[in-house]
Image (cartoon, rainbow, N blue to C red):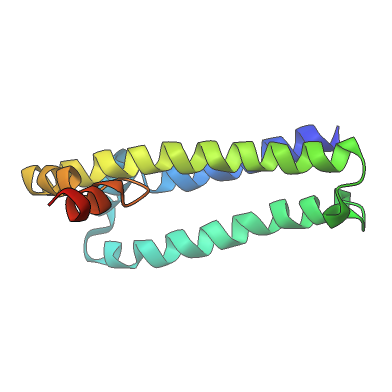
Length: 131
C-alpha cells in the first residue's frame, strides 16, 4: 500500500508542477495578474518545493535504513517506481517545454532545434565531426 501512496504522491506532484507552467495556465495568469505576473516564476518555484516536502517526508518514512543496500524486493520496487515516474515526467515535460518554446519564439526556435539536440549534444558533436 505504501508503494501506491508513494506513486500517487509523485504523480500528483509531477502533474501539479507541469500544470502550473502550462501555456494555458500561464496565459490565463498573465491576463489576470498584469504586472504582478513577473513574480509568478518565484511563486512557482516556492510551490514546487513546498509541495515536494510531503512526498519527501512520506518517501523517507516508508524506507528502511537499508535503502542503499538494495536488500529486499520492496526497496528495489520503490526505487524503480520513483525512477520510472520521474523519467516519464522528465521526457513528457521536455517535449511540452519544447512545444511551448516553439509557440513563444516561432521559426527562430525551430532553427535552433535543427542545430541543438533535445537531451544529448548529438547534433553538435556530429557537426564538429562531419563539418
